[in-house]
Image (tube, rainbow, N blue to C red; front, side, top):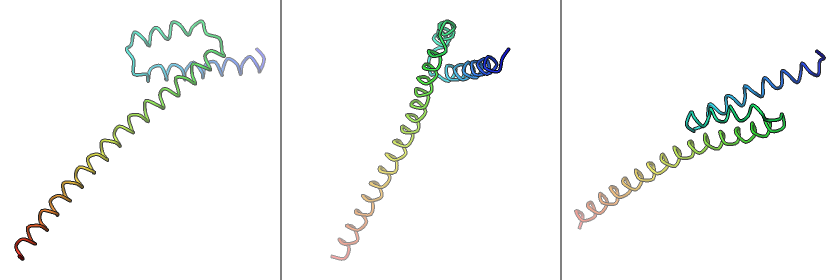
Length: 101
């Protein structure tokens, strides 16, 4: 086997591992993952490369979406706490002013 064919085999193995990881990481039912694996057996190298890119983008979007949701919740909590404290301080100030009058 020549160097080119060895490199191609190695690349195909690495691409297969990457696609396997990306499919495993998808938030879809196991039946859908199994169907993916059956379908891609007949894909060309170009199709596999395109699929890997799509799956990688989907995984990144899913992960960053979760981070954004967590950040949004945390910011909402901070905002809520801030307004509660502000309201309490305003009430305390009003009470002190009333006591002075």
